Length: 179
Length: 229
Image (tube, rainbow over all chains, first blue to last red; front, side, top):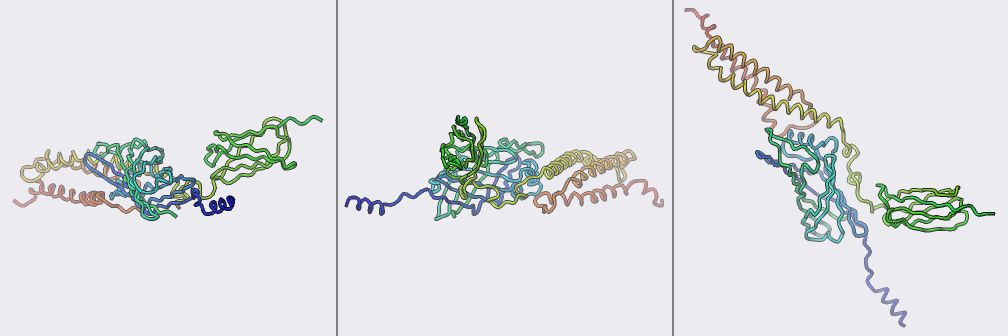
């Protein structure tokens, strides 16, 4: 009797779900860099970012990549000069890698450690804050990466012999969906 | 008959990026006898199995997140033998790569030649910019001296000075323009932004300036003298 009861209980008891593998795909993203000069402010925006996330055993690895030449500031001359100083022809992609616990992909604020490869250099940014909102199988992440030109050993361009500021914050607005 | 000295098989287990794979399960099976010896890799990804006898072995390596790797090895001599193996990430568990995002190798691979070409373009445009600023000085001087180069109050020295400054301005203007004209162009890039406003007048400005200064030179006393008295 006891054995039968135990067997029934084992059969009906909810099994703890194992960490299932999952994937995320970047639907839409508009990374925007901002450069400041005493006489001029400029922004360049890209619409060609692609990204993918692979989740396994409770951890998700994300990769986002953007072609450097896809950034558009509205001025061809400026964009070509940007491409030259960032060595965009030699290192054509900006890549961002991060690993997040699958559990944080709900709603709220997440703190990510980002590894960014740009202009032939690799820089790590700790505790980058993203605001996350979830809708069904979609999540939206917004935040700003506090990048600087010196992080990637980029010589600051100058206008009328005055160099631009070292700070180059990159605003990110991403929408992902899970497969 | 004495038993041959034991053979120690050791090595390192790594992933595709040559990072160590700790806690990987190693199974070494003697093909002839079927005897299996098991161990697992250390935190540094290394393993060592001692007291093996000569013969054919099948070594199997299994680790979470990786496809099981099977290799065959023949142990012949006593002593140490090394076997390093690299594991392949199991499908759907590896971190994504650029190829996974659909970027072609051409998009992901850079070109040092193209970069050198961009560097040359930027260098020439920088010289163009600086020469342009330098050209402003004789241009202003030409305009200032234009009043003494024509009309009743003109003098030969005034006209000569104006002509010399105009010639210098023209020379510098052409030199400035040449650096922009001959700077490498980027094919299939449509010019947008304020640069369009700079390119058009720089071509129109030259003949206009020429016409203006030429007209001034036409009003010299030398021509007036030809008129019948």
